[in-house]
Image (tube, rainbow, N blue to C red; front, side, top):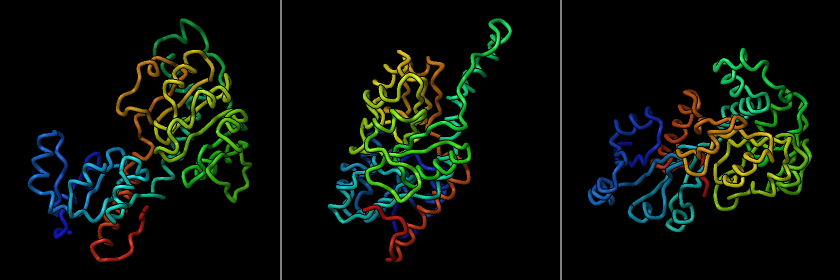
Amino acid sequence: MSDTLILGAGGLYPPLVEQLVDDGALTWPRGGADRRAMLDDHAADIRVVVSSAGVGADARLIDALPNLELIANFGVGYDATDVDAATARGIPVTNTPDVLDDCVADLAIGLTIDVMRAISASDRYARQGRWKSDGPYPLQRRVTGAKVGILGLGRIGQAIATRFEGFRCEIRYHNRSRKDVAYDYEESPAALAEWADVLVVATPGGAQTKALVDADVLAALGENGYLVNIARGSVVDQEALIEALQHDAIAGAALDVFTDEPGIPQELCDLDTVVITPHVASATHETRRAMADVVLANIDAHRAGQELPTRVN
């Protein structure tokens, strides 16, 4: 692919960056001045942008590259890329679906078990010597047989549901449209939350789902309900969530994503009812390699004038 100048725009899997650089790609500098200098020198040469789902390619970058032909997102989500701006220019956008479903679903299960059984919190309790000083850890909630509401029953949502079936959980869902599945459908996020013991957020990010889980949904989830978010931080009203947790309006939350990543509000860090992971749902060697392979397959198909394997626009 050396005849196609590629810009690696940040947040990418290092072996993918190494492979792209070996083929003559440029990497996106960290500083604003260095970025401007790169664009001054190379903007007309860049044909492909490869970017992580968190960094994306905004309208400003797209406008700065007059000969851009492809945006390949390293990740299933592409809400950080201005797809409308790309489409207006006739630039295809691709992502990396399917290959990360299992790892994201695995983490959703792990987070659910952790928050309902207080694994991380009881680990801290034991390490601090409180088992000896304060006695046995308080009783927690059983995962097996819980009522699980899945908000967003796409590929990842369905992989999560399948895993919860192994725990003999009752499953319902809410989605933009009904699916041909055995699970019951709830008409709104609030209705799903009111029914559920655990609300698992698995929707895409973007303007359509911004603050979809708001104060009303959290109130419907109630003081015995748990929130698990492996989707995007933007889907949950983070301030409303903090308020609900601080006032025990919900039982707990397990969060892999946040509104201002990598920033995490201290209020969340201070609560033992909150489990936090730093956006690692797809962060395994196997999945990241598979994601890199999808990116490369899209670039190769583009260069060959073939149909792109995972085009989204």
